Length: 447
Image 1 (cartoon, rainbow, N blue to C red):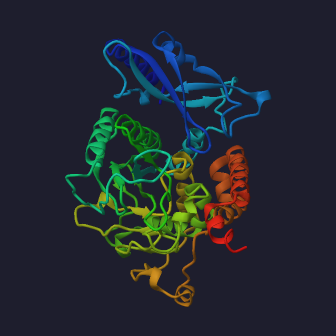
Image 2 (image 1 turned 135 degrees about the vertical axis):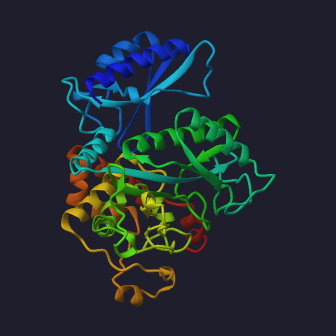
Image 3 (image 1 turned 180 degrees about the horizontal axis):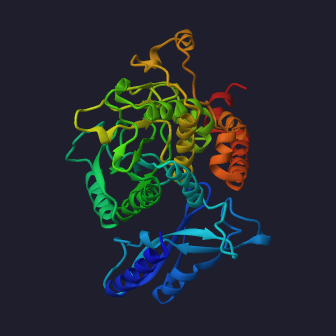
């Protein structure tokens, strides 16, 4: 944003805040794990906040700074000003803005996930491209947060008049659209009480902000109607977990850089190399795209969760799918990577995926042939013969791969890289020493 653009945006926001009777503005940002953080200012502080930012203590934010260097400044991004539709609007409306985090010396803070994504997007912009993403976030509705009692027994695309979630999805979509987020479709997912609302693709920074908004709105609307929504990757044993399939493409101007009418599979060399990069580096970036211990309860063969390093056009057992080309739909050429889950940090997730694809372009990697057969049904020998590897099977395996990865380190920057790895090691160690219900049921009666 140029200085003039920011000045114009500031004027628009001050005018809108007055017209809409805005009393409070929530300043939003995320920690390294992708948890939304917020503090509020009054409208009287808005003009100064847009100019100078607002100071806060960063020492209590996961992955930020030590207590002896705790001063941080949150500078709101004027392009993200939106009213919160679930708050009263008549006399004391509430708005929100996403913030970029700076040091007191006005330097961008290296530990800010939004800044991490901006750095990676600058790399692709310097190459002349725009990185577009369209994530599909799945989630569950439960009766409350203390258990997994479902609201329905529906399945994929089911239309049940007694489905309590129909109105939940409707109200959620209306709230998202009020906040400027375009929605493509919504539907019941495969598992009981599992649902999906798909946002229209857009540039990666806007979409990362949208993902954070989406997760809050889904939970907020559920709370208002007395139920609980969760983006936990695998809350229920024996049924599908929740994924965040991410469609992605590169555009140069108005043209899709992945498309080539004369290319094999209608893909350009840029597209094929981007695909090859995703496949090559997928194991290294999995700790970021699937960042929780529970993520690996979802990433097991079956249940529509991809674990094998292959790609295809129609087959949904592969890690990456290229939707089949349709004449006149050249701009829709894209790759859908299916391993990320909706509990990740979207700023970091999009960063490492983009880095993997760009590295494929840089190295001019060649993608393998697509695998249209069901990879799950192949024997280990068959997969080995075809060179089909696997994703890490646990958070610990993923951490080990990420810690050795120069690509992940470069994409995240040293500050976030070290803080993230340290946090994940602590999580794994806590999980490793925990005595689970499974162990008590299996071993206590016999040992």
